Every structure is written in C-alpha cells, then in structure tokens.
Amino acid sequence: MSEEYNPDIITLCDDDGKEYTFEILDAIEDDSSRYLALLPVFEDPKKLLDDSGELVIVKVNEENGEEFFTEIENDDEYEMVADAFIDRLQDMFEINEE
Image 1 (tube, rainbow, N blue to C red):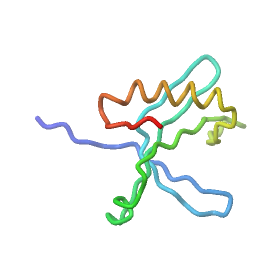
Image 2 (tube, rainbow, N blue to C red):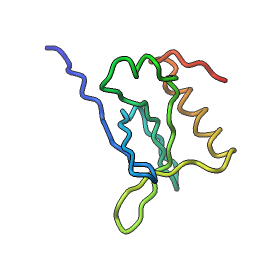
Image 3 (spheres, one colour):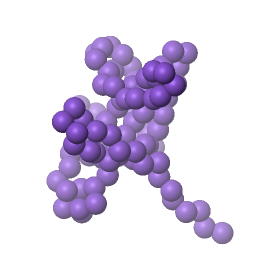
C-alpha cells in the first residue's frame, strides 16, 4: 500500500488583495501562541526555480472565532520560533541558516 502525499495548502491575501499560496510544512504551539512554517507554492515551474526557497513564518491569531495570520514583529520571538522550526525541519529539508 502506498502513502499518498496530501499537503496542507492555504491561500493568503496581502493588503492589496494579491493572493499567495503556501504549503504548511509544520506548526508549533506553546501555551499562548501558534505558529506556522509555510513554503510558497507555484503553479509555474519557472517561478519555483526563481524563488529563494525561504520559509515564511506566521503567527496564528484568533478573533471572533476566526483565525488570521500575522507577521511576528518581535525579533526575539521570531528568532525563537525560527530556531524551533529549523530544529524540527532540518532532517527533512536542506536548510541554510543565515
């Protein structure tokens, strides 16, 4: 029996209404917050080759029962979360730390 790969895909819109599609690679939760590590998804293979391959890390917030995603503005919080994702994902992906 073969296991079929079914990635979790989400589409996010920026302030200008432009849509971006991402694969959710991993999620981390602590007592008060939840974070997602996202990888851009491209339908055009050329755009995939031109992409930097950098992870996008967002914080999951909830308001009125609805989830939304925000940038992590606190540098210390971002570094802590990014380091945690690198530790978790480095066995599956080639990760260059900058």
